[in-house]
Each structure stands twice: as structure tokens, then as C-alpha cells.
Amino acid sequence: MPDAEPLDAWMARTVAAYYAVGDPFGVTGGFTTAPEISQMFGEIMGAWAADAWARTGSPPLFTLLECGPGRGTLMADVLRVGTHMPDFLDSARIVLLESSPELRTRQKETLKKYGTYWIESLNELPPLPVIVVANEFLDALPVRQHRLNNGHWEERVVHKGGLGWRTTRAGPPVQEGRDGTVWETSPARESFVTQLAYHIARYGGAAIFVDYGYAGPLPGDTLQAVKAHKHVGPLTPGADVTAHVDFTPLAKVARAAGLAVRGPVPQGAFLLRCGAAQRARVLGQEAELRRLTAPDQMGALFKVITMERALSAQG
Ligand code: SAH
Image (cartoon, helix red, strand yellow):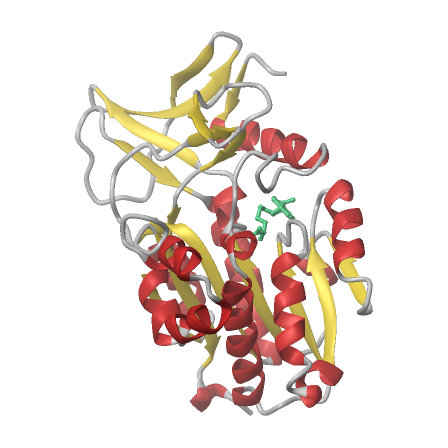
């Protein structure tokens, strides 16, 4: 490890190492995600995906992409919904963007009924329309932190002794800064969404991202580490390290690529508008519904953003 590593470089390494070993999800793992709480989450994503495909003009061949599929639970629920819409399912080439070989094995097992492909980078996307679903993927992409100290910008670094700051020439692209206020940026998330948005703008399609976060600009240090369902210090070995997603710059790059962006809207409002309460009644899952939608649970902190090629831009 270098003497002082920028926060984003450290985070990229740490996240990759975390997912490279074992299964981090569920009761025995570090944390529980929405698709692991209830199938209704993935079913609603599936209904959204099928509808997005229809709005894209029902292309007879398209990529159904999930970014960061974890155990493959969300995609399994999406595809089960798809069996009720055979045209959608028959047209889909199922692609999973996953960097962890361990999790690829796990996904292969969960999705063994279906033909699936794996990619490591958006560069590998075929030249086809793409419908994208992603839950808790963007929060795993690295952030940078900046602050003003006596009129000089500093950048967060990680060194042997822990977290520190070092002077940089330029600050983040914010309007004003007060001494000590921390601003986060994520060039990694912006370049990921930019690349995807240009693919959608060119070949057609849509994307839905669900993650915890906010519509900035808002100052604050949101770096967090979770181990065995508890918040721990960010440098704790073996912890899952993430940071809240600022959706504003992501909406901005998607719009710049020509896409129509909706949201971010709170997850609770989104799921309820899509019929989650009715589905929960059928499944007998009132407690799970509460967990996914109540504002004091996952309903408010988690947000949903969608982007698609604007109708007027469709050829
Ligand atoms: N979507 C799943 C898992 C979320 S955890 C769920 O909701 O349960 C984050 C996922 O993103 C894991 O599958 C992890 O391996 C993957 N991931 C993290 N960083 C990645 C990167 N840079 N490229 C590809 N996949 C990544």
C-alpha cells in the first residue's frame, strides 16, 4: 500500500476485496438488501423492466442487464415476472455485470434455469437496446472527499495510521466552501452512468437505480462501514465500505446524454405506487412491506431514479 492513498483508490481496492471472499449477504453475512427481504421488490423491478421494454418499442433482441447482482435474487424475481410476459423474456439476453468471481458462481446457481452472460465492464455490452436494473450497486463505487482548511483545499487519504487529509491544488466542483465542511464527489459513479447513458441514447433502452442517498449538493461525510449488521469504523478489516449516492450529478450526466430522467423519489413511495401493498397482502408479508417502505426503515433513505431515451429522441 502506498504511503497515502486517495480515498477513492483505497475504497475501490477494499470493496473488491470484500466481495471477493464468500457470501456477504443475508443473516450470516454483513447486511441485508431489499431483494433479500422480499420477492415483491424484484417483482416490481421486473414489472418496471417489462414496461420499459414495451416503451422502447418491444425490440426482439435486447440486453437485460443487472449491475452488481449479489446472490442473483433480484434477477431471479425479475425473470419469474417475465415468464408471464413471454415475448419480453424471449427477447432478453440476460447479462450480469459482476466483478467478484465468488458471486458469479453464486449467481450461476441461482439463475441456472436461464442462459446468462457475465461482463466486467460496460465496454463489453453488445450493440443492442439495454434495460438495466441495479440495487445497491452505485453505493459500492468509490467516492472522494474534499474540504477547505484555512482557504486551501484538501483531499481525504488513507495512510498507515488511518484516515487523513492532504493538500490538493483544486477542490471539488462546488460553488462555495467553508472551512472544515466535507464534500463528496464520485467520478467513478459519474463515468459509469455517463457510459451507460450514451449506450441507451444510441441503442435505446432504460435504467433503474435504487440506492441510499440524496439529491445534492449537500455537504457531509457519508463514508460508512458495516460488519455483521453493525456500523463499525471505516477502516475495520473485513467490513463492507460504501458511501451515500448523490443522485444530482448522475441525473445531470444522463440528461446531458439526452435521456429523460425521473427521480430520485423515495423507495417507499415508488414501491407503494407500483402496488406493493396489494402484493404484500397476497404474500402475507406486512412486516416486509413495512421494512421496505416505512420512512423510518428503508422507505425514505433509499431512492429510485430512472433514465430512458426520451420519446422524441427515438428513431
Ligand atoms: N444488488 C444486490 C447486491 C448488492 S451488493 C442486492 O441488492 O442484494 C453490490 C454488488 O455489486 C455485489 O454483487 C458486488 O460484487 C458488485 N460490485 C461492487 N463493485 C463492483 C464493480 N466495480 N463492478 C462490478 N460489480 C461490482
